Image 1 (cartoon, rainbow, N blue to C red):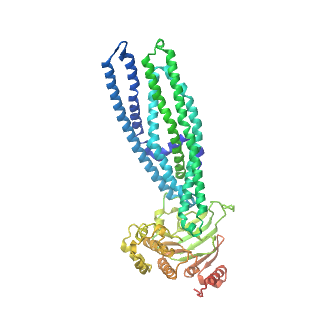
Image 2 (image 1 turned 90 degrees about the vertical axis):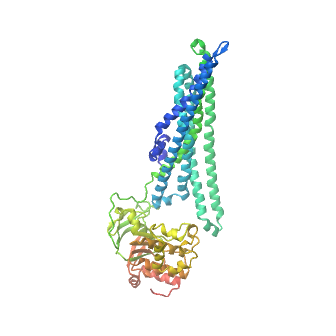
Image 3 (image 1 turned 120 degrees about the horizontal axis):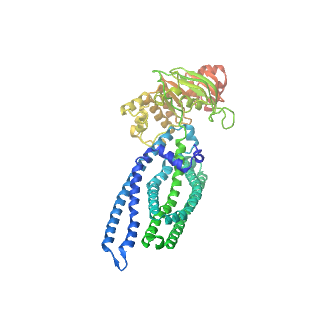
Length: 600
């Protein structure tokens, strides 16, 4: 993920970018600020009324009750007006914040799903989940309290500072000068708080990623009785998360007392200066008392700012990580002017294709080429089997044809149109990939079929089972299409999950199939069903099979033998056997290992 943002953008710019990404956050902010300013301004009338009460309502030897009552009524009206304005400002800010965060969360979720598979493989799933959940939650907490405090306290400081200057510029100057060093302290602590919260968010993502991996691999860990090392790794990530959170908390805890200390010094300086000026300097007792109240009003936001800054830095750390994901380029780029694919059968062509996962072909350990100068033409309706040892490039070719990634050098065409010029929606409708380990959602078989083609009716689904010769298997299930498959299809065997995936592909009615044959062993009956379904599914369609069992290759129209990322043999099954080359040797080894005597 893009981490350059941490060096390139300070907090204010990060927040600015966040507002740009989610415009609802700033919608109507001007009126909201005016309401907050009116709300805080109305409260500032109270110190003025106190000053008037002391200077004019309390006369030597008597109290002007009527005058004080009038001031109390004015004060009550100001309090009511302040409450109404602040309530409306709070409501507007809360509504806009939730709308903006909803848009940001939706945009982030959509962007994550459009990232390339390489980006998904780089990042732990738990870390990506933490972007949508934990990191966004820090923003929710900030806008629900910290953002409101920032708006209200900021408007209060502006209003109070203006009244203080109008009241007595000398005392105002003393208050400003005395409290000014607090800004230096806050900036000093803030720089450390930024790093602490960034580390805290990273440790939290690592922790969620470790927990996610532990849960996903529970079955494998149980099988090898190896839970403890993984649990220990999770405990380490949990411990690191705890340490980073404690450090951030300790630094943040330093902020609040620093604000309190400066508040005390400022009030002391104002009172001392006021006593020195005295009535001879034109400062009445009421004016001094009123100014002390104003000083507290001025310092209240500063004290709260110390807490808000802590929350701001946590929110900025979360926002920085969210923007890091949004700055990551999505999967293979889409053409701005896509070309339609021809109707009917589609050919597949690879022209001078080379590929390295690091996007470089420099033969380094990390970026060693996977494919070298591959040129291949597959005619419409032809069934081609890709065979070869592990790491020979079979899966990479299939991924390039399905445009799950783009070649480093060369072009891939389907129906004579470069994949880079084909709209993704049309490509996914005309070309379907059946992976080696198909993913099934924890729902019914019907749900797992219908999401591939929402328009498919129950009759269409049953017909697809019949077309693939799987009606007997469907009827053997306890609830038919309503049978629950369990978490990730765990209620079905590996072979049965493959059958559901084949029916799912059939429902889409694609023109090109890319099949990655399952390597796990299945019972003989299920294997027969899979083979029969594959044959029927491939009829009339351009089919590329990654053949792990050479019985599949023997039934294909054409066999491509790969080795070290290069095509070493190309021909029919019988032609390659007769040639006595690498494929014949591989086939003989497979025959001996399986004990098969057939010569398909």
